[in-house]
Length: 377
Image (tube, rainbow, N blue to C red; front, side, top):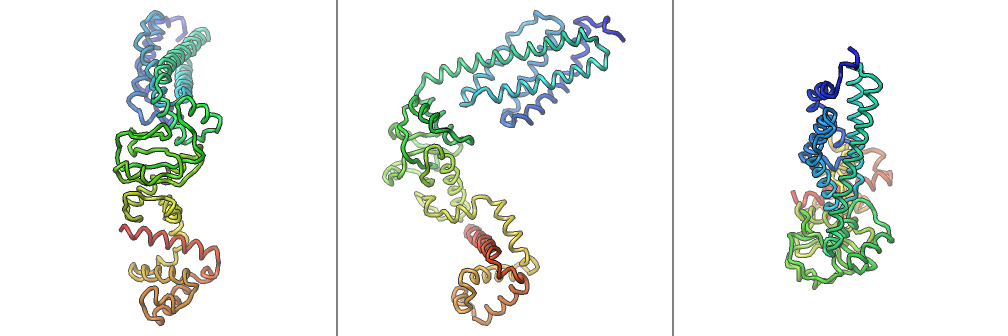
């Protein structure tokens, strides 16, 4: 079959049956390259489907109306602005979709032996089309950004999400954004995670994200106890850090809330992370803690559950008391002879590792983490 039989209508007819499969492919590629869009799966799929269908329509009729797609692209751009993000992710998504579309066109061309002239025309259409979509998204982002930039509260919301986001902000950028948002940058800050959202009753020195699933504040450090009491809800207060490291304080405060819920830390109106740093260190990464325990305490797995628990308690006390049988006996409320018997079992199980300082440290950390967890069991 030669290209001459393919006019615009025939080309579009070749493309349309493959549209659903192409949409699925592009969506998967976008989710793989830009995982953030996987959280907005329906929006992504609708946008891709709208773009692919219109492109095929334009192959058949270059004057096909673009209004619906343009509005979709403007909304996508505006959505990025409202989320406090740049257009970087959206631009990557457009590039991914364009590459996937071109690979599809190339396969179509080979299958139907389309001429180089037709392929060149399709390439020009596709890449020009992608530029149009990007321009519409830029317009939508700019329009939405203009609305947001006119609102001081919106600027402060963007600022708090920036300083607690996954990417570290520089001092220069922080100073510029803080000035625009009216936030006097303190020397140190602490994150305060709230049990539930509260009515704002603080001055400009406090940044807040009350729309988060776990509402929180970023406040100057040291944190005033009276301020916390006035909030009227349970809180966890992260350690003081520099403003550009606020994300760490927030992460530790959120971990503290989880540990209180698990029973590993006592429940209280105010939980200060600084008072529980060792517990946070041992339990902040549960899968890693489990991995350490599996590796360092593997010799205990040969014993029945009840014996394993007793030997674990004895090993921890032995490590903490420098191997003193009398102190261990008092610690565990057992006879010294019982201690000596258990220690012999431990020596048989662990061998020379009990004399290795690094191994002893790792075993003690794993055992202490297990003991902390058992409080909430």
